[in-house]
Length: 389
Ligand SMILES: Cc1ncc(COP(=O)(O)O)c(C=O)c1O
Image (cartoon, rainbow, N blue to C red):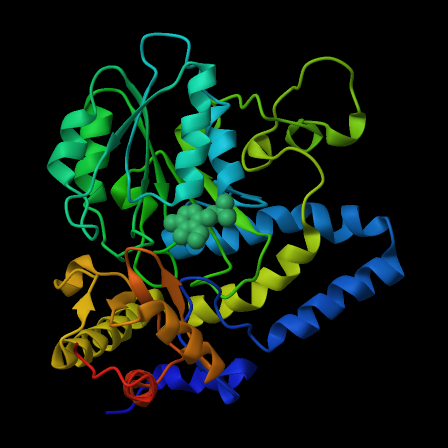
């Protein structure tokens, strides 16, 4: 069977020298990023300050839209920011936690930075209700849904859990939240680019994520989608001159909010990050998330099959419909194995309570999957630990 997605391999230089399976952390850099960043330099060098007006100001919207199209977000509904933690802060700043509706409900499988942020909002009146996982892989949807009540203001949840790649039943969570008047902040960092996301079909209120993992876009560009009808109403307190309707009027006094997406921005933005993001976004759009997803399911199934054959513990959902692009495997001496894999140019990572995380993407081959696991066999044998023990 031919794998049409492999034609993109040539676009990613690192694939020539490594087995790159760490897209859950940092996607491979597209070759085109070098030229794109050069164009940033050329624009700065030749156009100077005129670049803001001629290119850079509008680029924020352009990048937001290039991300938005991948999740069926209407044009103009996605603003770009430095990181996802800041995106949470922008959302939080749209609400008042001093009234009776001040509960924030989430799962302990959220990315820790998100939890650190919401825990800290208790000083602003937020009450955090955290629902615990039973097995370190799944999130108990029923308990999460039950915890969302009339006092709930916000539900910040991951679409795909970073630790186990479990795909949450976000539709059920969003429906419950809306039935009691709460808002959902969907963290699509581990889904968009690997698992289809449709913000309109899900009817989520907010969606956040970054481009550096599955979207191969580098550090420093994250996105915040705001449902269009909310977008024109909300007034973030975390604001600045980029969010003013006349930013170059430098008016004194309170902010007169611009329309989205600029309404949700603050100050001077990370322009080089835009240039770095665009080539990856173009490739992902062209490759197609549906095709990427189909291939991803096969690759993660193969990883699980190989781990099962060796009797290693798999910390990922067995149901491929509920599993994202990562398989965490807790083989013997997992931390040391991961260190040795890096030395042998098999790029993966390790997370406590999960194991070695393998995250193949559309640019990987099935042979690389087999080779990665055979390398683990070799490492374990070199350590004189029999595989499966
Ligand atoms: C699901 C998820 N959310 C958030 C983050 C971190 O976001 P940031 O560093 O942009 O604040 C990560 C990073 O790994 C993640 O996997």
